[in-house]
Structure formats: C-alpha cells, structure tokens
Length: 229
Image 1: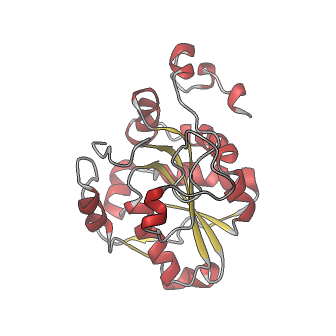
Image 2: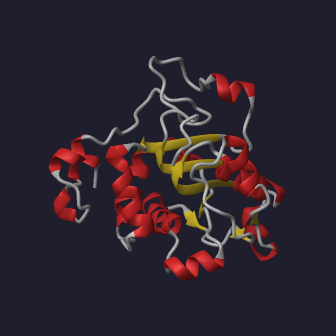
C-alpha cells in the first residue's frame, strides 16, 4: 500500500479533507535529525543543530509533521485503543525511512514501562515496529530495550528537562545483547520532538554493543524548540 492507497475507508477516522492537510515529509531533510530543509543542501547534509551537537543516534527520519492535522491520528493510536493504526503508520515509515531500512540489521520499538504497558494494554511503538519489520523483511527485536524507570510525560518540559527525565530510563537486557552487538539497530517511535527519548535509547543500545542506531518516527515537530506537546 502506498500513501495514495490509504483512505478514510480503511479505518483511519479521517475525512478526505483532513487527510490532505497532513504534511508528509519529503527530501530534502537533515541527514541527522530529519528536520526539513527549505533547499537541497546535498547528500548527507546536516542542520546547524546536529553539526553543533552530534547525537547518540546516527540518523533520524519521520513520515510527517506533528501538527494539528496529524496529532489526532497519532493520539488515537496512543490513547484511544486503536492499535490497528500501527499498520498504516508502518506503511508510511516504509517510504519515509527507506534508506534507513536498507541499512538496518534489526528493528526495535521504544519500550513502555511495565506499569504503563499494563494500563494501556499495548505499546504504540511496537504496534508500528512489528508490521514495519515484516514489510521491510528486517529482524524484529521487541525486547531489545527495557524501560526500567516509570518516567513522567515529556509534554511541557524544557529540552533539558526532557533529557533529564529519560536519561537513565532505558537498558538493554543482558539476555538480548548477543542480538544487538555489532548490529545497526533501527529504533521506532510515534513522535520525535527534541530527540531526548531517542538519544537515551541509543545510549543504552550503544552501551550494549550496537554498532549504530538510527531512528524512525511517525511524526516530528517542525521546530524542535516547540516542545509544548
């Protein structure tokens, strides 16, 4: 299925008009964080922020801009018991992250803390990562990471506050490290804001011996200084 194949009749809950308002991200984008560029700056170009402060992960991509048009759909997956939307988002990411998928040795979702997983009943990142791994024919590692601290929500926190909130929240279980060592892991999440969660996860994977970590998210804020979500 392509983006053009997707429609409200497939259960997204979007009207045709609402669908057309979603801003899908296309090249050119920053090779580091996936932020859109106004003009093509050449293969592998990185934004000023990525050049000034390299991140733990190598590259990040997102399928669309996180704004009023896409927020409702993302939140339906996350909070409205709509795990089937993960399959739709997987198709989006199979296009948006084609270059990352081509290099990936394994795909892993950002994990939830067990208490939150019990309350929600499913991990929204896993509902995206699992069908994406099938589409791309890449190994799926659902438990490559564990969330060992029950962090508070990131919404409304400063960039520094977000980083501190998740700094030690993730670990790679010893039993899974043989599947991580030396491999390029593609981390999947629903929303990319400042990259704090992605960096904390990447740090844990690299400490477990991963060769490199890339990141795919359904949506990203256009401007990382917009951290109200």
